[in-house]
Image 1 (cartoon, rainbow, N blue to C red):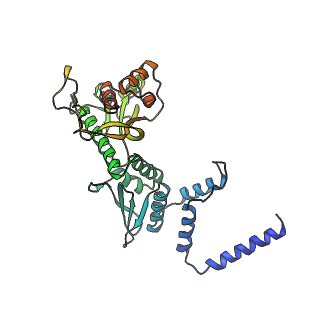
Image 2: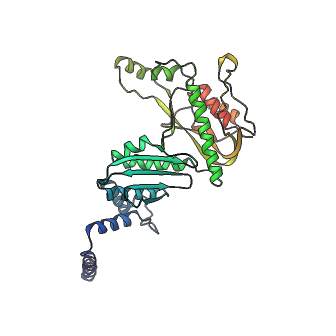
Image 3: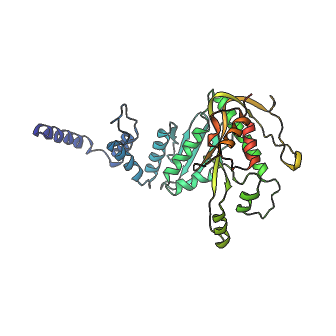
Length: 336
């Protein structure tokens, strides 16, 4: 580095020092947070692993948000990163994270501890979001970020707010049908492993806040033996998330639950037809997302393609999913 460059750098640092030496530390810290969160107008480097970007990300993650000010800054930062809006109440103790389709209200004490977190979808009353409260209290902002991402993904459907809301309503209808199916022929004291092996849909956990409904549909013989030999052990089998996703094509999706109160042949669940009164054409389809890749036979893929009429869509589905759950979901996704 030349002597002229060193002199220029020293002069610049001296100017910065003189400019901010009279300002309180809280304002300087807020400015640093703002500069870190502000999107770059152009990439620092074409390399996605740019050292500068990695350094900034690491600093942001390592900042331990303890005070009310730092927690608010962290929430506002996460909101901006996910394309959401945020603002703080006049009292300074409530942060609102908003979009056109939902909003989150986080209430904090003056020392920065989280009191409560509520979630409200468009047209619905706010309800306490337990998983969000838990992650915020544990300062697990990676999990909070994932929740915000999942909530935004619920509405990645073409169209205006009304169409996006219809897509969310369709997902709710599917979730209610799957939940009702999980209760069929179920005894009160059934355990999780038995639900996976013999239940209509496996072990189902309803959606809470930004955490999608998930279904545990397979447990290996080794895991079953482990559960029997070690009572209380938390063995975890293969799982899928139930969600909705936008597409370029129209598909007929339900706007209300379709599970008929009267069982069909062989006491299997029966479903009402997708009539115009009970359904709507939307640029969306239901999706089962696997937590891990699952091998699948070509004959099963061909059968799914035959049932749905979709040539490329359901390669992520597994033949191991309980038949009723899979066929119900696929039937909902049929093209008109």
